[in-house]
Length: 602
Image 1 (spheres, one colour):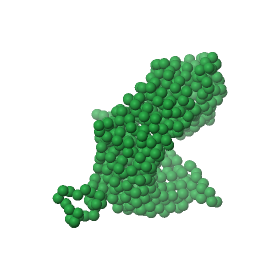
Image 2 (cartoon, helix red, strand yellow):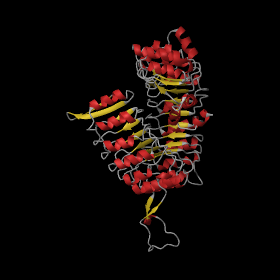
Image 3 (spheres, one colour):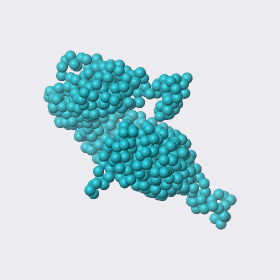
Image 4 (cartoon, one colour):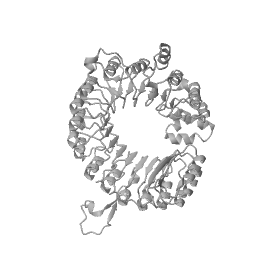
């Protein structure tokens, strides 16, 4: 019963509940065993005790970074193999200088692996002879027989032979990432007779793999490769290939015509990422809207040629859950609004909309979106650096989007206290039928304030420089808020910070950089309300001194990352002392030394 009740709490609250007593501790372990809870284990001798403890929880998702050939690392790998291996379903070994012997020893002890991340593990592939021994291949094949997800992104030394050996050990593979790998896009049609290379990974070889696994492969990531239109067309034409997810971020050579052909060939796609494909324009979005009726997630960030004309057919994507068109500088939102209006729209499931850095976006578009098609579904709205937006947009958001969990308004510099408080100028409101212009009335009328967004978990007000304590003390009262940024607010004082702390006691991520009115005394009062803080940014808060670090050492015992760079009142010695108190904390500290900015991570 306790496990069932605790399952309704956020993960951080479940961790808090697990500290009540032994019964609650064991009841909370069900959540901590979930596959999407990743345990990052440092490769150090101090981790050995923790590994034994994690084995009692049957932890199934582990990440190791910077693996090398040191004795400490070898001991950690052996301990993981013995204590955690039988239960592991997801293993990440990104980066480092992992040896083939260590890799084989670790993987063969994990018979239940479903997810394997080898991104950046170039040392494994540099020889081109990975898994060259038949007896080794058999052991690895037995261990990876259930593998579904393989991440090989960022491998400079990947070659046909080593890829084929590893892929052959995972016959049930469904998801493959080759992002930023060096792939040779030679004239593959004329090179079918070539042998597998031990030095080059060719697109011809990848095509052969896709043909062999066409009936099983569901997701493919080729981001950051030299994929060209002809290669994309050849990929889409593979007989039997029915991809559900395709990621092509920063594939700068693909064209509108190639995307249109892909949409005709792979109509079953539910997730498509074309961000940073700089040659794409309106034709690509129109082709996607008309050809991929079941699409749920669409990302088209940083497309400098995309305009509002591309949204004319967006209403056809009735299954769309998330849309990301951030940094599309020619989009003003008018056609997006029309595409979602009745009778064309709305999109009933759209929960996430990112319009960050769309500098042409105006209040009228945001107000129309909030009042109409998105009010019953939207949970994430990113309007960062939409510099033309004013209080009108914020008032509409507060009044009409009650489900919002994430709201980002960074660098919307025309948002004021009135917008947060829900106050509107009398002249902006339409007159009631019985009123006349000469009637006496208050200058400002109350409207729904930001407090209406009771589901908020993340709020970014960075550089909304017109905000002051007047609104922050009254509006920032969100007990479930986890992440808050108030950086670059010159009018935020100790009084405002203390009020925010009392109103948002559950914060885990807090950014207060360049808030120069904050003092040690104010931080000491506020910090008592934030025992859960894990990430704290106090950079360039020049009124703070080493007393603030003393307070952090006493109160913020769960801190993981602290940024006090450019805090002129905090010395390197004080940072080092805090590091000894809280060894788990990564501290960032910098000072101007000889005219240069010296940043040190401890």
